[in-house]
Image 1: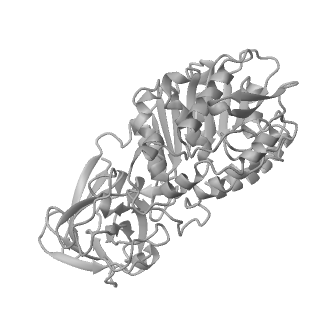
Image 2: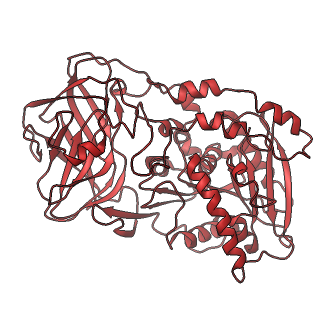
Length: 539
């Protein structure tokens, strides 16, 4: 998240310069700029900066609650005068940007998405909704961490009744899923080197949460400055964020907003990139699916990494969403098909946008392909078994370049497809296997095999086998005894083209993408009906 935000901050300067040069981009006459200190949990205060139209006493508020504001410190005297403020204040909205608890000019301690941070967001929304210059409605929007805070506050439901809408973009909905893939600690990636997640919580506890306040006229400047040397819960954050056996305990439950998604009463426009390798794509998809009590919800998925949407259909959608939820405009955005998704294939970066009535699309069916000893993915199961040994150094570049040439993984492929086949959702791999020790990982790859035999990764799966029966507590593997495990792949909207094959690589380490387990584990996979790849296929 940290490196993407740096890119965003630099791009923001360019956006503001372009907007300033455009005819009609000027703000309404004499906008009002204000700063407030909002009392919150533990006697702390939240710094919030506001830009609002002077001629609208009923302006709804578009809020971003961010830990990144230090990065934008010198782009504008008031952080609310950003690209969102430039666009929406002339339309009658108020724009607010606030510093997350324990960062920049807010006091307190950074809480890694925990209960104190959640309460501070609630207090902030309630404060803004009560101002005499607003109509009492607040929307929260932002990308990455800034989108996470929107979801975080919304799950408090009736505690923040003025929160009318949220737009979480590439946001975390479950902090465990940012750090771990079913017990496997994520690391970097080999496709977008700046789009990684190993930096959190370390870079926040010892980076943004340690940045000094920037307003020397603040009466609490000295107190805030001194507090930045206070480690708060950084030791606990580090232990929990980089554990080799991360049980899903009270620490993670406190930071699981998805489990509380039924509490969200705000309208939601959830946006996420299908190729987001930082905040993984299921954080957006699974949040959308968990929303059951919103006035209405929308899911917008596009073919990009950790970023904000840039396609032509995004900004009009966002404008209409705000107009309806904050101003009450009857523009139909609440009755349109709720899902907009951009697909791709191995040969096309985009197969275009389409709308769906749900996600996965209605009548999506699971197609089961069985693993067989001859390396086939077949419609019928066949008995047999095969073994491989993990060296702890495998990368997907190695396994996809020569999938059938090594003994460090197993490779399977189906028959050439007779028609384009669209996968809409998360594939899963069920295995019956034995391992020669009590701990091991699985990191399989779902791949597209072209007619010339070249392979391309479609999706990745991760599972620490000590969590094969659930995340609550690590359970050692009984060595050399049969176990069952299911690995869930990252969801995708992917078309396998006619003539291509669906392929599977079963491996135990993907060392750039995840921290490997100790080398040397030997896996024996038993074939038959218990070992199969399940694919969600659209009609």
